[in-house]
Length: 376
Length: 117
Image (cartoon, rainbow over all chains, first blue to last red; front, side, top):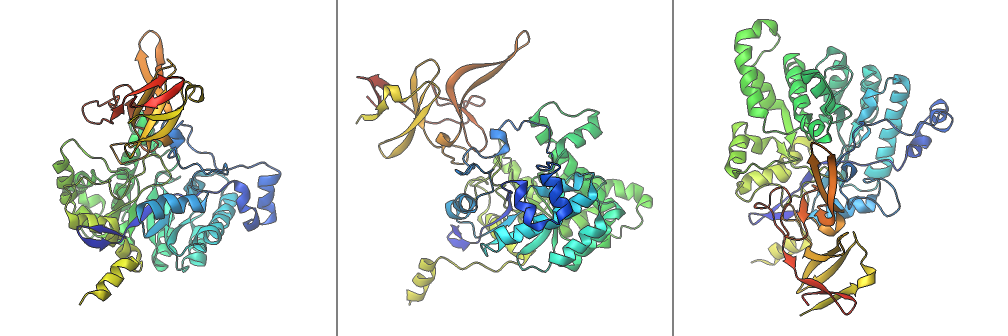
């Protein structure tokens, strides 16, 4: 907790990436045939984007553990950089494994999904009750993914499933309904995170070629998010599953008013194509979607940021996130300009996430509680 | 009051050392040109310690020769958002009027790197 405007404020970090030390970490959780994919067939991990991340390889330069493992693989360093240095109360792990859904070899992907989720629970959730987790999915096989969500969805520290921003089908495709149905059945949110090709696929679809810079690739995450949210709304997923809570991480939020306005405007004229929508498109967004803040972009005139948040009541639907250990990490004390209203800051830092995920209110620091007891 | 950072031989070109001056962390860096420069160790954007970031150079572009790297060892990049600062002036390479870190006098004195000589 941290004092914000004189009051103790819970801080929840909605996007932290745990990492395997190596794919061998999953060996104990895989059946024999799939173990052979690693030992005999030399599978080392799911291929990522073919881009050089030109900011420290995509990770904070100070996030590499001393033992030589990858950033996000060392519990003690994560604890130091997230919990200890920033007084964060809870963190939500989202992993790096959502690329799984882009693997063509679907049976192996399903095996990896279950292995990873078991490893996540054993390695991270069992170790620290302040850590919450996201189930990885294999969207190639929606039925197997739904079974996986039923298998582990009731774990008290599992709060959501996490989907890649670009999968084999648009996220609103009916093939994925069993996945959303299972998430809702288990009371889990549905998070979306940039993954392989999130920026490049959006570019290629729109302008005909993959970007030749990481900057352009990274910039275009927001395009992919707008396309996926549009698809989820218009295909009726949010209508079909009114209890579904969608959490869009690392895709920006300043575009949300634009999307709401244009969707409503075009729906007024073209509604005959989407008669299954029982409400205005913007209403689904306002009622069922939250957005991660990271990376916050601050315009030259800070007032413009405040205005854009106001346009979609973002103070009630933004979740603070550091994105640790990634290079564009946001600090909870520095991520918003000083002129952002204190009450907004308190909601965005913690209470929105406490409510969304049903997390317990963290205890105030001992000295604060004892000071209050001592008061007459 | 001057502070001895290290012996000159201990600070090779392209390398940096941390020191403290009047209670503040100072990053002392030797450029590939052999010159030693010193700046405040805190990024003005979100407060990261610059000493955790790479000591770099300036990437330039020319139609004839393409991308080149110059002023090696005269730029530090923030370990988080990769903001680049000119160690000579303390200014952001891209937005010198918007972001700036303090610079400190530093020199080689009797074979030692000395802050505030």
